[in-house]
Image (cartoon, rainbow, N blue to C red; front, side):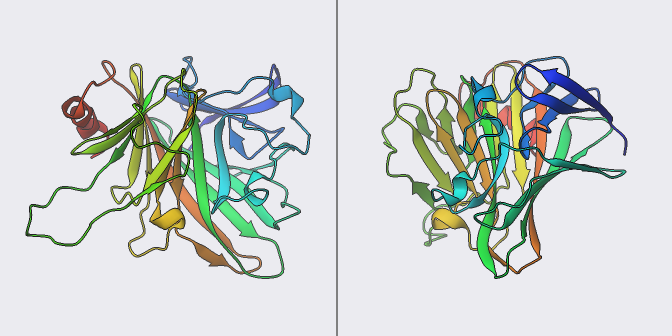
Length: 303
């Protein structure tokens, strides 16, 4: 597998950036911070990710900053452990079929983060291995957590399991987790027969977040004439964080964050866990307005 790699120096925000492209999709990964993917787009078009302002102020600092783009954390979330800053240069390792961006070991957690990107020579998809390695002296329990900060004015879609008529099934078949600052009457939230949709509103004054044990293995974001899909491996009987969440969505007035998680695992010293996502970026005829239109678009790209 071959793809084009360019090194762009003196980027106005990041300094040096590695750009990967197969002629259809391109991603940009700064070498000055990370591991973090700051851009994903159709080649020559707009970034689908949110980009925060004034990022130059935080490069090489010891303060965590939400730069935007796509990052790797370890769950469950707690401050300060989760907010270890990714403000320093990363090491690059390239093989015949992938390129990896490796962070220095976190001094406070002894966890080392890295992303390994597999971009096909053609098509609209790529795969990312999110790797957490325990460089400490004792076992650590955590989950891989991949977070994509999407640009404003889009709509996230979480698939719900199929309906089973009463009384054929008497037990619950999914669970939804709600964060303490979330209002379930918020107009950005829509619960329907097939999906939960969460709309990003630039005028929003308060954040919201919810998650669920999504067994359909994907989550999507509609924006303008583009659809971004993240697929992942759902592990049946896996012990997921946050009351069993394999996907989570956070939004505020700036952006919407699509998150997937692995089950909690105990990592022995020197060992790693890998949480893989497959990304797909597709063109649509326009933003779907209801469940029927959403489902029609998804049938083409998700099945």
